[in-house]
Length: 84
Image (cartoon, rainbow, N blue to C red; front, top):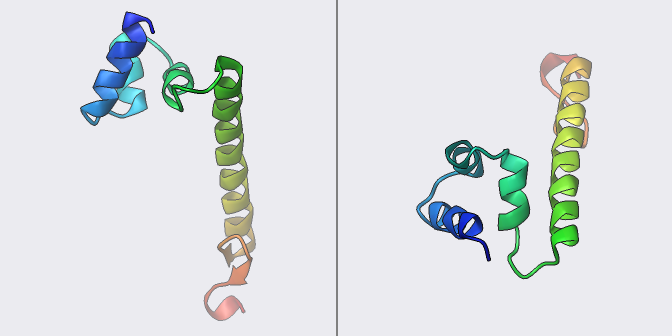
């Protein structure tokens, strides 16, 4: 384990967010996440997990925007208020 990764783990243990850790070390939040997702994972799998997490967040934001535009709430598409 490199000293940089060790510092990332120490900072995470102190309660800093991955964004804050990245700013402190001059790295992108995604790079920090690659190292901190699961130390026992193979690096390629860890990178894939970070990519999947980013994609899931994008999909969730897309669903929320579509539902808001349609006047729906939640992922199941329940209607809100008198529009039902």
